[in-house]
Image (cartoon, rainbow, N blue to C red; front, side):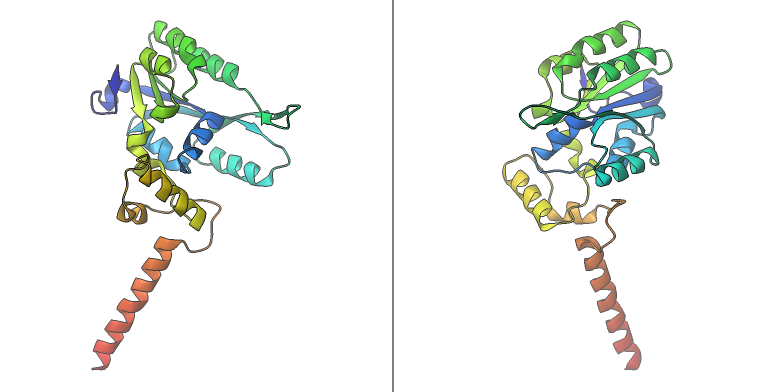
Length: 235
């Protein structure tokens, strides 16, 4: 089994189909205090390859306006969203299992793509990964290592460790809570980034309109530069 992107060229991967277990990825990222930027994730996983389709599977609450806005943004930015209404259990928890939908789509589309990228850490997909591989397709599994089943990693042709790609897939921190969570993750050895790397990344959230730390810093710098220039001109 390979790891990362360095061992296989883009042409060898052929057409790529991406299958994202949305709930699994969300919870995996949240455990280390991160929020995924899905536009960046799509670009990183394709790695200049030829994208056939990118599917995002998730449970939905029809009354959650913010989630509906997010899913609309996903559809407009390269994803085909497959959703299922959340079920409420006696203990109050909400859940929607889309494992069957993911497995069926991976198998039914096999032959249309040369490489499938499954973004999930769920061991239950090991059988589906093997079934797709037996049909002649290449299967790559992407996930945060601590949240990905070793069995799933073992049956994949390549494991894409998202921990090593955090700088390329994370959203720019916008709130003090997010910054604190990222700082805690870094202190625990879960996030290997410095502040300059975080500030250097472009903010791309479709929902945030206020100025974030980077924009404020750039605005302040521009103001200072203008003031200096004007002072020199007057002299």
